Length: 510
Image (cartoon, rainbow, N blue to C red; front, side, top):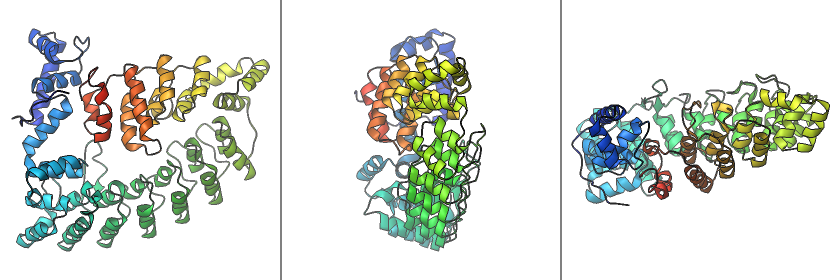
């Protein structure tokens, strides 16, 4: 890749965004100057219907940066200065950037109370507090937050030799009167404040840090911390919160625990009073949620052991047994039957099970007896392709497409089969769907994103699937012609951004 200017630019982000909107308006009006700028700097010129992201890319290239995210990063750094840039890098996990800033200015961690807090420079923090103890709650730094929120979200905690110093930093702030329930709000979730405890358990997964905050009075039931403690494979933080009295039935935390195959974590919740008959996010009880998430026999059996109602209907009127049968989970169905579940099935149940299992012989038998039944079942169960794609069942997806199911039919969260293949990183399913005409640019899913955006988000947030599968899924979507907006990578991890470098010579420059 070419070398680009690293000279700080003399405009702020608001000006940049305004300039990009003005350029887009001019390009949409076919203004000669705007068209010339697009011709000179856009890698995919001509563009029939330019979008804001196209104008942003042109503006970035004009200013000497390979992409809009690189321009934004440079503008932020130029605006905030080295101290705030160091803090920003620490709390967003860009540790290479943080180290580079330290290399240029070895004493940078002592520049402000906020740099001292993200690095764990206890001596510098002590000097700050000695001069003014009020600084323990002083709002400032790049995100306009108090020092504790920078310390409790600093990814430098993951640097082994810095962790003890950061723990001491948190203790020192709390001793100086820092509010253990300090929280910040961020668009578009302004109604969901994110406290320091969430940083400890949901971001850093550090039970010792969480214990320090709890001892100082942090609220156990802050609507975020218990839920996000389930984001991690290790259950230390979840166990700590539950043992200290967190409500196991708050904020769908048990449902989130069932998002991964973790019997140990599930038993923690149930043994601390979590109710398996609470309503699941999609309706029905948590047994339905576990079946939808295709949890194994140990988790299903544990829910039953702790009193899950095996006859509770979901919004479609299905019992857990019928739900399991329809999704082809025969082992789960057998387990439910062993626990006394009623096993009566409708013709539609049999059809949907055959579709889930790819049992063409059973489908032909049912067709012979009920000629219209398969067509009716397909019409009434449009989400089957998305469900099969979500679980990587390529043959089932192929069968459904052969039977006339649209590759763009919607499933859970209003995502198409390609959305779900992308989120769950099933590249073979993604290739099949794109070959059969699935839309690469379709939006309207609950998260307002294309399949490629789901894949990018999944790579950083779906721990159930291996990294290599996401890389292959990126490749499958890009080779099929998916458009990549540089803005989608602005908040992605360095690893994800690096995965798109091979595509920089085609549709976008990273």
